[in-house]
Length: 316
Image (cartoon, rainbow, N blue to C red; front, side, top):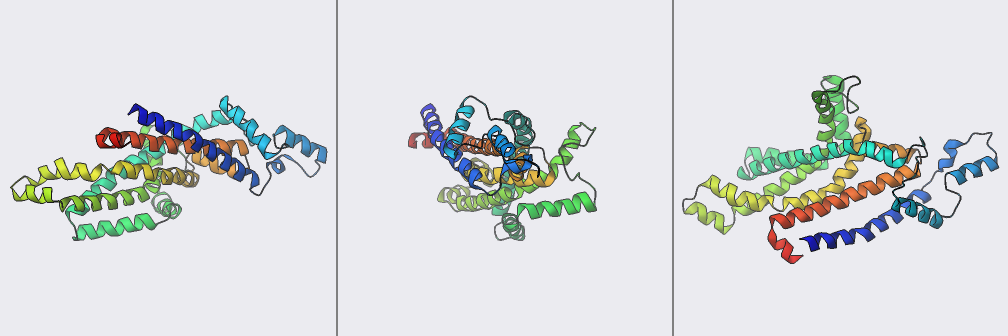
């Protein structure tokens, strides 16, 4: 197991290196110039060049990347072009909110998706199954931003049951207030993964129900629920770990959209604001942190799969 973890960790180094290069170049060649936000119509060419030099944008792309890379290796992510605060300090401030949102959405997706998939499979071709199948298709197809707009329109504007933006109400620092702010962002972020997981669990459960060992066990008088929980459930849920790992990109990218819509103070909102402000250091930092979260998530997924199914360790 340790060798597998070490091997995967070593493989992530060139992956992160390539991501940093691609991200750096895409940001630099994109239309727009961050210098324009710091000049006035009265600014002379000398003033503009001085500002560009202070921002580290006067050298060619290669030198800029090398300078950025050296600073990163020393834990220095630079200063934001927008508010001149240390980038790492702002990332650390925002990261817990994003992890809370993503973690809650993932747990809800796994729980609801598994329950819906199992119920649907046990009632195959029945009215309950058909309803769940229809809802899962809708959940997979519906754009997250459009679903968020529907939730805001109904629960925030029409019914006035839930707060529309933010993580907490000003002056209120209670757990129940946090939950109220969390409901709509979590539903928006989890709807797609819940639908995918439910479809997968349904398919795998139906597949297991048709296996010879299940049919034989039930024919010999074994308790149907015992067979279901001891055999079918384990074999159907085991590959779910892989599905969770595959859903992480959707979860992370969805967090950017969801946080921006609901004003959730996380990395996604910070990243979106930095893009519109041409805040190069912040864009690079949020991109790299999102990439690292994705890579770590997939690594943890592989480790868990190896722990649950020892055969995987032997294959690796």
